[in-house]
Structures are given as structure tokens and as C-alpha cells.
Amino acid sequence: MTTFTPTTSAEILSTVQWAAAEESPLEIIGHGSKRGIGRPQQSEHTLDLSKLTAVTLYEPAELVLSAKAGTPLSEIENLLAESGQQLAFEPMDYGPLLGGEPGKGTIGGVLAANLSGPRRLKAGAARDHILGINAVAGRGEAFKSGGRVVKNVTGYDLSKLMANSWGTLAVFTDVTFKVLPAAETEVTLAMRGLLDDAASAAMALALGSSAEVSSAAHLPERIAARVAGGSLGTDAATLLRVEGFGPSVAYRIEALKTLLKNAGPLQEIAGETSHTLWRDIRDCTPFADRSEKPVWRVSMAPSQAHQMVLTLRMQIGVSAFYDWQGGLVWLRMEEGDPEAALLRGLIRKLGGGHATLVRATPSHRAAVPVFEPQAPHKAALSARLKAEFDPKSILNPGRMAQG
Image (cartoon, rainbow, N blue to C red; front, top):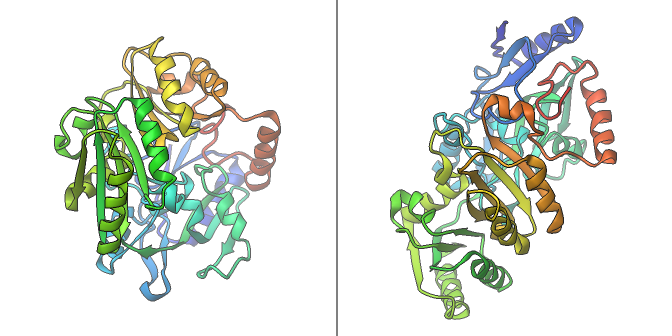
């Protein structure tokens, strides 16, 4: 097995061309922070992009940043913070959940996995902020899509197509993202002691108001103690984040207090504690315990999520917490893992959605469909895309589907 560590786009192109000619599979990694997601790799060689680093363009006034694909995300976030800016979709760091170090993700991996965080309700995900890419397809051809301004829409949808492809269609060499100003003030309003169904109703009421809530999450009893250094205590916490200019935030927090005055005890959380709280929710810190207990990431209708968890708990021991107003459910299986078909069947019964096995042993990941199985017509479309971009199936083969 050979590990290729290119430092230029030309070296990446040469490596992929060689692999295509030899029909020799390549595993594509940055720093490996998400290496444990997906089916175990079926690759003879590794293409390591960790040396392909540099911010090549940053124009704060134009709200645009370009970087080599292997540039650490932490480096980019620090650079943006110096100018009071951010990646508004606050991409998740999978490292700690998968037993690795924090801050090892790359900007290319952000797009490849279409990462986002609690602010997705308001800001969307990586695909909603990508402006352009340079990449090498599995057929050994370099291509470019999009540009450095929003108005440059040439190939724009192709950039979005690469989101959530997990390195199975092309190898990114350069990416360009839209950046936005960071909020001046952030305050979190916490409702304490609510059960899951009451929390769902309260979050729906808040999101339907004029308070412009940017994030909404619910941490059931005992789960709350696993974030922000335990500062929340053990009681369940239903959290609403409000961001913006100071006076506006204060006004909207008061409006929420009035709206939710019958929901139970209310608590304001501000400053660094609020930042830490949402970072821990973003990174699934409550389940980042270095164990091998399976962790699932479920996306479904917020109004049905708590019912899914309740029904599942009748059959197996499971811990859960909710993000995106309940539209994202993190599940840790405490007593083994149920059949994937059981979980996915329950989700379908309650209106549909999808479930991804984020953490499990290699043997477990090899035995079940890690990503949500596609309907036949969607699977056929995905197969055609794979054949177009990577006809010899040399890029991360088998990671997303068996074969």
C-alpha cells in the first residue's frame, strides 16, 4: 500500500491519472477526522491531502475566501475570527465523536461531507455557501466549477453536486466559500425540565414567532450535564439561540420570555458559556466518550422525532438528544444496536427521513448500509453520476454503498 501526499494540484492530477490507468483504488483523506464514517474502505492506496494547504484568497470586504482543500478548518476559522467573520453554517467537527483530536477537519472535507451545525435552521449547510471548486474527477480530468462571486453562476450547481459525495466523485484541490459577519451578541434562552414532547411544542412555537431564533435544541435529563462543562446541571434543557446586535437580541429574548412564560423555569445563558454550549451540541459532545457504542444521526420531521425516540426506547436502551428544532436526532445505542431496518422502518412509518450510522466498529459498518439506502430511481441516478465522474470506481470505492 502506498500513501501519496501531493503538495500541488498538478501532483493530484498525476496521481489520479495513474490510478485510473492502473484501475487501482484510492482512499481520499485530509487529516482523517471523518475516516471512520462510511463502509470500510476497499482501497489499495491512499491519497493524503494534508500537505495541500494555504488560504489563497481572503477578501473580507467581498465576503469571500478561497483555500486549498487540505487547509485545516481550525486555521480558517481563526483567520475569519480576526476580521469578525465566520462560516455561518458552523461546520461540525467529527473528530472527538470518532475518537480523534478536535480541529483536524479540512475545508475540503467540509464540502465533501456537506457539514453544518445548529445554525442550519437559519444559514443552511456547506452546499448553500460554496461558490466554486477546482477538482480532479476519477476519470483523471481536472475541472472547475463556479467562481469567486455569487453572480458567477457558471457551473454553480456542479459545485453543489459535490456536496455530500464523500470523495466518491472527485478530489477537491481548491474551494471557495462565501463568508458572513459574526454576530455581535449571542444569548441562549433555556427552558428547564421539559419532556421531549413538550420541548418539541415549545421549540415549534418559538421558531414560528418573530424572534428570529437561529438555533433550537433539546437536551433530555442527564444529557444536559454533558455539555458546557456540566454548567447546565442534570435537568432537561430546551435551548433557543438568538443572535444579532445587542439591543435587538435583548428585545427578542424578552419577547420569547413572554411567549414561553408557561413553559417552565427560564434561564438566560450568554457569553462564552453560550458559545461552548452550542459548540458541544454541534460536535455531539454528549456521545463523544471514546466508546464503541453505535451512534446514529437521524433526520426527520421535527414533530415526529420525539415519537420515534419513544417508540425505539420501548425496544432497546437508547440515549438521544435533538438539534434543528428536533429535525436532527442523535442516538447512542446503549445495549447493542437494533437492526438498521428496524430504525429505518420506524422512521418511514412516522413520515420519512434518513438515518446514518456515524460511529460503529468496522465489522458493524461492513454489515449494514451506513448511509440511508436510496429509492431505486435515485440509486440509478447516483450510479450514472458515479459512472460519469469516476467510471473505473477508483475514488473511495465502497464507502457509500456496497460494491
